[in-house]
Image (cartoon, rainbow, N blue to C red):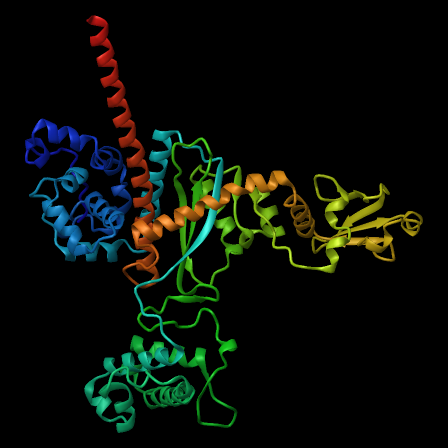
Length: 532
């Protein structure tokens, strides 16, 4: 049953019995910021729909469990260590507004809470509640932001292809009733069960032969149990079936199975049976990625992560930009300028961002091409609707029309084109026509803009987000998270990003308290000196 946290504190809170010197020091620490600014804004009511209204015992306050989850990621510690800190650390109790009696929470309560809130939109609501509070209290400007993706691993082993096959077979066999296993061929049982992992530990020259053997074993197991509903309903059977379809094939008119060539395997294929949701990125490997957006106005006292989005590792940055902009717009945090790397920039994204009044600041990748010496669309004069009205040599367009597919057709005077001194490097055809799209026009403009010193100077600020990615890895354990499965890694990453924002805020706030105390002390000394 849902029960919100009681705002009335008790007389048993430990800090009340500390000497004044210690209590004053506590009020100048991060714990004071967490207690005063973070705990009251956790939107507990957003989580109420996850609980019964009148059935069962009252729940442990959601605000307390959310606060604990943030502190776990802030200090990158285990659940056991977290509970120990809750029981015996006065600063943690003070930050969470609990007394020693209220702090009696079991680890199982944390596990159950994570399962309950996994995938809930209330997590994102909590994130934005914290972000908006930090922005308002510190006058953070968000008109200029930067976006980047960060790859990370879940808590799973990195497997070779043979190890993947063998682990999946082993996992399936272990999930079977022992009577089923006893009926299997003896040599198959020996390969996967008697010396676990041994068959996958093959020398490189033997690996391909072992892979073919395992592919045949998988086909045998799928065929052998295909009519048994009690087996086909197992999750491990589904994984075995998925692995076979993704990584193996049967030659025509053959009852044998062979592994597919490596270049035929999709990036969303199974990477480890322990984490079926993990996918593969050709540059960074298996795992997941998170899109991180952060403020970057130079006069901010510190920068704030304004949005995050966990994704599969194989997803393209090209498709991530607009959902991020729309998410920020819904929260009233939409920037005027969004700095990104070349992976996000395309003609379509430039135009889509402009429709939301956002300037996409980022370069296009320019390869070596003989066309670089020729005139481009950016050299033609266009109106605000991207319609060409004049060529680079000053010849006016006779007319222009827009086709149903969105392409624009421009016709020039043949007499002008015939005598044109740059005819050989002009994209206008021999029939004095030029057909293009708005996306191509935007791409051509960007290629020209990014050569300017002003563009390069403005773009330098984007690299600052690499420090944020590094900070997440070093201080919050975001290079390899402690759990696996998309829902769980998304939850862990959400609390890590919240922890990063809160720590930045608390560092700034405590420094301001220290400076203010120093100023008061200096003023007092001046008054004493003047009196003397």
